[in-house]
Length: 232
Image 1: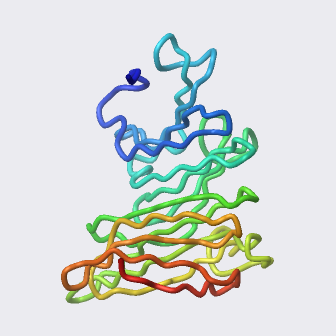
Image 2 (image 1 turned 120 degrees about the horizontal axis):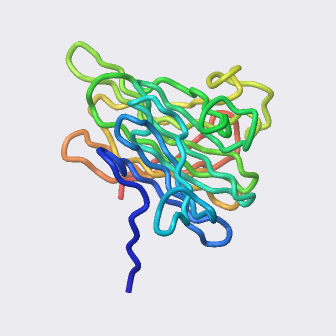
């Protein structure tokens, strides 16, 4: 049996919902709330939403386009991390509690990591965290050409996760954004996971010709993220 509860309602509320469980097994949800942008909900007593107001619903970023393709992970310290698309940009948000630059009472830090393109094709964002609580994001970057879009499957990690003081993207170039594969035809539906060793594995659709499910796995923990690609 399932318990189904109404948490937050309104025009467009609940689009691009992403769910993760914290270390106690409690649900955390990131979602788009129509024209109010990206929101976040978690159980809380007292709260401001959900049955008997036992949930807290709060805005992360109020831009009308924020929150598309949201992906959520919660680390071992119970800190939520969200990656999402906003008007051509890959954005990463983490709950800081204070001294951030977005969200209610500036409790979140929202940073633009890379461009993803503005052509109308569907995009995908998938986020996970390693055992140190550092994020790893897989995403597609679309560059609109004269005849078709060039599509790059990319992965972004903080430079600190790679033992580097700086890299090539994100605020202050403190992230590393790496293209794993570039396609002449559109590709979608990426999903990323991290092994206990800290190495990445990414599943994705390669849609040239008839389409195929492929997987890329990182073999060595190096700056340039060498990966092996296999058809499934």
